[in-house]
Image (cartoon, rainbow, N blue to C red; front, side):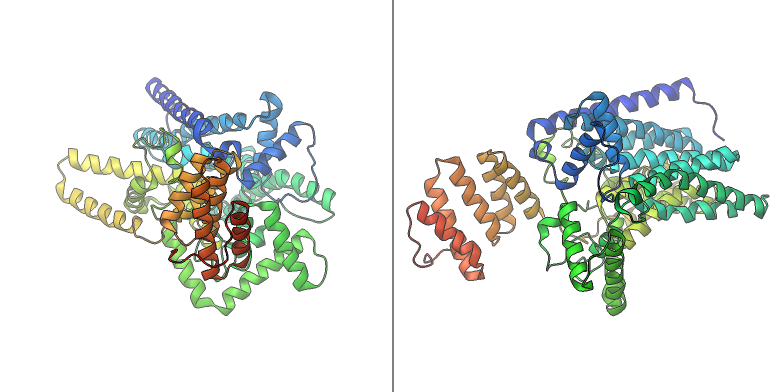
Length: 550
């Protein structure tokens, strides 16, 4: 059990908290000034924002089965009720959660490692680029991170000093974790198996601990399940959509990442209500009857298992790719690109820490401490859980974010180990460690995926069009076309931006001619008809494809 916090540790933790909060609030200010996604958030963010406003106004029950994990919406609803329903209020709350997470990292590090590792890891999380990026988004990961850290703390305390109240507390915290991210229900086996590794503890006592954990969790989740049954007359544990998420990460075109099947519009991938309705319509059409939420989820789970059973070789290749992507430096996204939006915030242009830097150290630390796995069971377990969840579903930066604190603790332990070898002139072991670190860096930086910046810039351009910021829209459509010059939709939106600016008649005509040429050659008849109409409106009669247009 760790000693009480010293005065120096409290000061250090306070300074790290202040640093983390300052960086996140500064990033929020930059986002408010430059990022179009603050004024026009993504579909998930809009849903959470509106949901929270309704809760703040007193509508605690809502309608229908929960589509998304509810805890973040209720957290925001309470925040809005107390401080106002501006979206900036939610971002400030995110910043506070991020800064609090840094203190929790220090607490977890002191309990599992030592004071030095704890404070280094805490500082790394404070300046983690991905964490700062997500603090400026309405994303449930902002709440999941501190909840997971709290779970590690209360579980380790219950393990070290068992009591019925503490083990029930573990279950209660796990229940709230599941309400924030339903996939965390998969962490239950880790907690139930853990007492088996305890020495000098009878089997009956281990069983009682497991029962208490389950009881505490059921108390929390039961209320949500009852609510779902009351509004939909159907039993749904937390939120529906598990089968859809499973299929979205496991179908012939997913390739290890989250994605819509090609026969469905890509635009609905990030719109939870529209996505649910589309998948529901397909399930009901195939089944020939109206289906409830659980039945729709089970339909898509069966579709997933059918795909796996009919194409096991392809699925295994994708699983291997998922495994590599989980440890990869690239941040997988499905709504907003951390790379494309770095230009909007001077904070994120600072030399911050990212998994690209800390990942190799984390792998080295996990290897160095492998023989101490019993003592570090929970820290290893939370990383393994995130890996398995990624293999079951898909690899996304927002989902990996709650594993970052545990990974950075191992990275800090590895850095301390290397420093001790250097200071003690133990050059042989240092050389072996550096060689292992180099191999880990090679693994982390394998070119397993290429970020679709063309889509990222297209989305930014589209947001600027909606805001009627024409110069910015033209700039980002241009960036997108530099990476994908054959994208007819992007050329169409660029032409609309030229029209919207009002002083670019010649540019608009030239761009619509380009759209017409590409659409005719690619047989996109709707795009061609649209281009022809706009050209006529601009005084040009497009009788034939323009010669030499490429």
